[in-house]
Length: 506
Image (cartoon, rainbow, N blue to C red):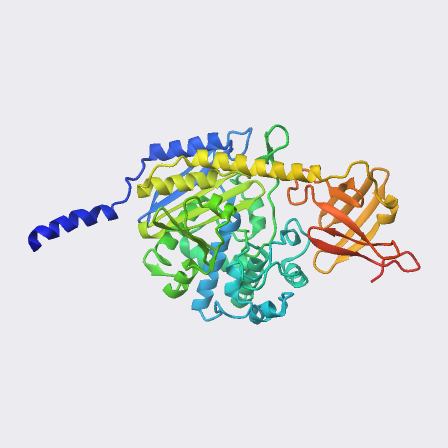
């Protein structure tokens, strides 16, 4: 009986561990080519690692429209928020050296870091910074195209009210990562870019990777970024964002470089047989830290997934029974996607020089499904429909705002009475100017005209600046009818007093 039963059990068990047949190079070429066509992208580059071997490494399309320069496996891209996993790994290495602990108070390493809520301020740790649970929302405009240095951004964020209570909710934010990157640099006693190079890039043989955003502009073989223009959707060139974001999104690399990063990640922190980080700290980066709410946005991003968490620089979730870690990246003109199936020793990175675009997600998920033998799903079709859905929702929202616009109104004051200097403790100085063409606002690195919307509400006009386009600015008044300030970007700006000589005072 036992002799008969054992072979039968073997027959039942073996299929559970058989992965899908690996797609051929020709099939992978076709997957990428179809995605380029579907998502109207100039080019893309892809690397796939399976069982510690680079099994696919190619560029497709062009790195610049109108030119014959082909996209190659050595073309450099900004990888945007895929940088976050690198910062988490750097901190894991520093933990291994005893220079940092995941649960160190942030104050220990960055003394000038503050949060507006006293509980959060005293208890926020390095771990909290890396898993988006500080209670802060994004506030990206404090650093995006900002003249503020990272140290100034960190100081100013302490003047912003928390959106939710400390550790109660997951909310994606870059400034905590800027803070964690600053902590890493101070603990390692070198610039963050140098720490990345010495501790990660050089040991992994990532020869062209850089953590210095300025180096991207110097790269000869770099991808030129594009965005969807207003001219019937025609692609338009967009300048890259160059900012020292301290590990939130400033690494640039080629897929050849990133293939080595995948090998390291899939080998539990070893590379070519050498351990580069203690296993317990490596595994901490992959471990779920904070659960995401399964709202409609999360379900759209992770269709068919039961539960999504955030680790340290990684999203962690199930995908048709498979354990997956992934992270995307988005900067003007560039999209990136890193995806790991650790149990299958499988990883893929997809980069493209168009943003917005779902190309990276579609290709990565198709590759994962094919290698793991999962049921076929047309990810191109899924993301085309999701893009249409998101644009329709935006159009509906815009139409709703327009429907509530009160017609035939005018400001309660002459436009010149609104002119002046306004201030916010974190967002800084804003200057309202009045001319025959109407009002305009100068703030941060932006100078934008404003359209009168209704009553004392104005709309900023910022073509191409999606972060500021159609933002409503509402003037507020004192009891004596003087202009007190305005509400804009979710913040209250107060008007600076004018002294007797006509200069703005405190």
